[in-house]
Amino acid sequence: MNMLPDEKSQKAFGKNLRSVREDKKLSQEEVAVLSKISTTHYAGIERGEENPTFSVIESICKALKIKSSQVLPF
Image (tube, rainbow, N blue to C red; front, side, top):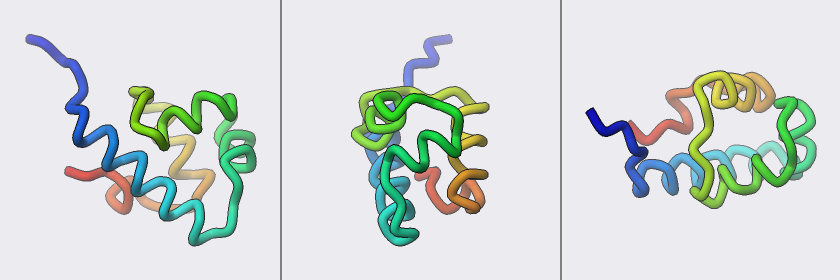
């Protein structure tokens, strides 16, 4: 079974993250630090270029104090 990410979902996830982050008036760097990932990796996730692991998604959601259902496009 091929488990490549759906590019549309990846981009929608990133767009949703950016919207929440901006609503909370946080920088990409602040979210990355709180999530314990690099700013470059976080920025790539927001652009839909990176495919984050479950643990990274969990860390980002905890950093933003949101439920994953608020940003996952499925």
